[in-house]
Image: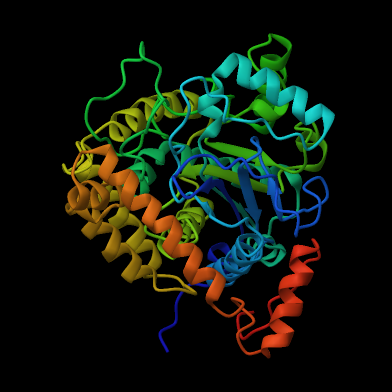
Length: 443
């Protein structure tokens, strides 16, 4: 076999997925049903839970070293949730909310605990409650112990510097992720207020544009100290309601208190960049996750960014992302050549290292999407269904019902080799909030 540089542990970073989606009724409206009674109480369930709103379900996978295994966990969690939905209840496969009432009385804040409920009330009052109804995919990515050992990294400061490189990289190339996997070309009834100067035609990603949910604040990424200080100062200045309201594209994480980053270091980074992909039953594609793994490896290995100019670079990148998000989804991006150049860099990088997935094939697919925007999720929706939001809404509702049928009638994902009785036991265990390990050849 060809001898290649051993960088596989950068690629085989730990990957965790957080996928949000709304429970809806058969008409494509937010459900009025309570949190599914067949699941462990929403205050106690750790991987199937309510997010910001009462209808906003969130599925949270454990960290895995392979994309496929992570998607298997996501799939079986989907099945556990879906099997307990009320009759005529489905999961909305799109990041912009479905049809809303004019007075937004159908948007109900989740009452998981008193502190969270009061915080969410504040956010909804200040930030516009309809914008809290957006959903998406978060990808958590972290270095393995073996990767740090191979890198000869033993101290917190060097580890943090690696995560800063990755955080800056993902923020600087957010526009590329928005181009490739943006999937919110339109919004539906009563999302935009009458006075909003909303786009008149479909775009690549409303959610990733300035029309999406956010508060406009970005902390500093020149150091972990600057990152923490920026968030704490924003809370003190009432620019943010609380630490948790920092909705940066990339968040450096360890636990709920950002101050612990200063003493314990960064454990992983959370990427909040992807729309739900309506063409994927689980909301996210294998290619989308593998791109993050490949970019993470490149940023960690090459360390291409200067920390002292990071904030200015990110500010320019945010403006570029907004431009890309609001482009016509059927047109080649104004940053086509820059996108091609970066994919070629990733292609060259992946050809020289050990990769646990088909990275070259991934790069070829991404290059094709850059040249042909009708292959992107937004481009597919608009080229297939036209610009009429009603046609897109009707198709998304068909997706919701079709995915429900498929996933509730399939064997338990990741446990297909078990007997039907054992699969039922696995599903019940998951519904009770007890994790079950997927055992397979996927190490």
